[in-house]
Structure formats: C-alpha cells, structure tokens
Length: 545
Image 1 (cartoon, rainbow, N blue to C red):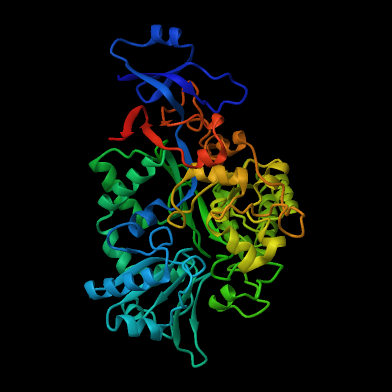
Image 2: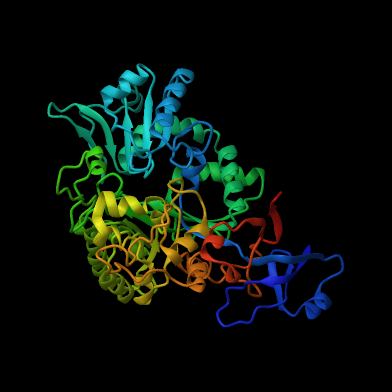
C-alpha cells in the first residue's frame, strides 16, 4: 500500500484546528495529521516525502453545480466553441460559423453565442441561418444553455416541425403564421434540436469524458456534481470505468419531468459515483430574458438586441403547483431536490412549493437546493434557511456580466445585488459557488475572489457604494474562510459527502491539491490566479500525470 507524507504549509479546512506541519496518506485515505517529526516516525518504509516549500496543500475542491457529461461533449472537437472566453468579438463568431459550415457539410453545432459580451451579434432567425448554412444543419447554442437557434435543415434533422408539441417546461417560438422562427427555449427544446450532433459525440463518450475529467482535475476539482444527468449516459460512464480508473467523484442529479420517477433506486452507487437528486428549472437565463422577476428589464440597446419589449418581465417554466407535482414524484422517496431559480418570483414559487412538500412528508435534513439565485433577496435567503434549503450562488456572473447586469439589464437596485452571498451568510446559510458547466470556465479560485470583492472584469464593484446614489446595494464581499468553505466543506455537505471529502481529516479520502500560494496570505486578486500544481485523487497523483 503506497504512502505519502506532505510537509509544509497546509490548509485543512477544519474549523478551529491549528495548521498542522504534515499530513500522512496511506493508500487512498488520510492516515494522520500533525507534527512533522511524529508523522515521519509513523510513515512506513518507502513513503514518498513531498516537501511543499512555498506551496500549500489543501483539500481537493468541489464543484457542486457542474454539467460534466454535457461539458465533455460541448468541449469536444464535435462542437464549435464560440464562447466569449474563446472568441471575444461578433466578427470572430460569424467568421468561425461560416468556416465551420464550409468544412462540415454533415452539420454544425456551435456553443457559446452571447450578444451581451460579443457586442454586435444580431439575433439569428431561421431565415438568416438558412442563408448562412443552406442545406447544412446549423445549430447555435446560447452560452447560457437556455436557448438554441437553428436553421431549416437542423429542424428537419431533429424531427422538429411547425406542429411539434412544446416539451414540458420548454417551447419553440412560432411566427404569426405558425411557422418556426428558429428559436427554442429551455432544456427540452435545446436537447431535442441538438440531439443529432450530440449523438455523434456521445458515440465517442469514453474519449471525450476522459478529456473532461482531465480538465476537471487540472482545475483542482476532485468531486463534481452533474446537474443534468441523463440515465442513458450511464452506459458510457460504465464503459469508461471499465477502461481506466475514474479520478473524480460524481454526484448525479437526474433531470426531472412531469409524471416521471427516478431511474435508479434511492440507495445506489458508492463513494465514487452516486445519484443523489433530481433537477428542475423554475425559470431560465437572465441573458435570454426568461427569468421570472417582480421587476422589469431595462429598456436599453442590449435588451432590444435580445428582442425584449420595454417593460419586459420573464416568466416561469413551471408554476408553483407544477413544482409541487414534480417534487411529490421524488421527495417522498428521499431524493434531494435541486431547482434552477434566478428571478425572485421563481424563488418564491419554488420555496412555496417545497414548503408544502416538506410539511406533507415531515422531511428533515433534506438539503433541498436552490441553484444560481441571482435575484434572491435577503428575506428569501432567510426563508430558505428556516426551511433547511441550501443555495449555490453563481458568483462568476459578477466577474463576466457584472457591468451588463447593472447598465444593460436591471439597473443598480436589482443588478447591483445580484448573487448576494453576504445576505446568504447573514441568514445563516452555508452557500456554495459553481461555474455551471461550460457557461464560465471551471475556476473555483476566481469564484472565491469574486465573492470577496464583487468586482467585474472592468474593476467595478457590483452593488458597491459608487452605485445607486452612493448607497451600496449589498454588503460587499465576504471573508476568505467562507470563500474557501464554499468549494470545500460546505460543498461537501450540500452533496451529502461531508463524511468522506471536503477537509483534511483522518479517515477521509486523500483527495488533495497542491497550490502555488497560501490562500490566507494573498489578496483576492492574487487568489483568483492561484495555480494548481498537483492534484491527488484517492492518494494517487493524477495531475500532472
């Protein structure tokens, strides 16, 4: 049984515990934590000694809201990457689409369309995409993942016609004559239109998911939740595990549907792979215009490009009673419920529904989860805490879209308090952070830094006192302890995994990372650029390989 002894700077994430000098790993578990001299004596012959020097050892990070199986496909060479982090301008996007169409007569799926960041993009129509691609199927997925544009050939390939019924919680837009406009909204429509290309990539799942696991480990992540798990993917996952060891723990949330039930028993899996919950979408994306808010979007050039009328307010994918019905399909059997909810009205509807289901079933320690919670108010955080509902905050929205939220979409009062982690903490919650698949890069340390400063890429403090007439919209920033907990101990608890991962304690798995700086000795800006030098999974070095 192999063993390693780490000596140097160590962040254990154990509250109140002094920083140890050393950590001894035996096999796949942490065997001892304490003074270096004592652990040297305990270490078996042949133990690998890792002197950390100026670097720091800490627990492997946890991404509590990812989409790794979808990201594996969307970041594969079967999909054209047009995200703003890859192509910054509208001209680059359109040139890439034209080139891909010319080179791929069998069809093109592009992922990452974002006119709010790639200024100058014009909303596609089925006619404009027909003109661009002709008989080549062309599907353009919005960066949010909540809308999709397609041409006639793509609709034909997917079997979508003017008469196709809207999937539950989703829709296809039609013109005044009842014809498709080339726009699909929400996951049911997105998956249907993307299916032909996704099936090609899924046929090579072992390779593309192996690549995604490598990217996950390189970011220092050793446990990740999949919030759009599909039962059909299990075959590919099992094939991958048969070929080589999986080096990330997966916690799976099957996509819910009216009238459906979980496809596996509640007791399933093991410490490596386990299905623990189900996912619902109460509303959509702020970047598309379909989040359910009590306040309107601004009337700006950006919202007009989005096609929103003055005074526009988005709506619900599922109303309160529909969420109750869906919850009743799963909660009585002990499944954890997770619900995407950005707008304050979507959050109200979800909490109302969940309160009813919690009371009906006398649920305790259910850890139901609200996802993203962009416009969630202080009062709603307090209500969630009373109900035992946890939250996962999309803090990276502030970095990439902070200026857009305030100037283009919602103004300082509502945009300024977006992703209000400080209020979640004040309510007694233990919030987690995430990057949501391919929507933003997997960058946990930036999430932490942004939660501490609320700074956008321009340096603006979103919700700070320089906005709204000198009155801060939120209590700006949180501390380093809570920022770290959001991707370690609190994330482990949200995934019902606090007994096996999230901190450096004897008996837990040796899922560890070595980073190039002490997170307690740097500024938030420096924390954001932390480099992961090594990732250990169950005691084995997996990055760099």
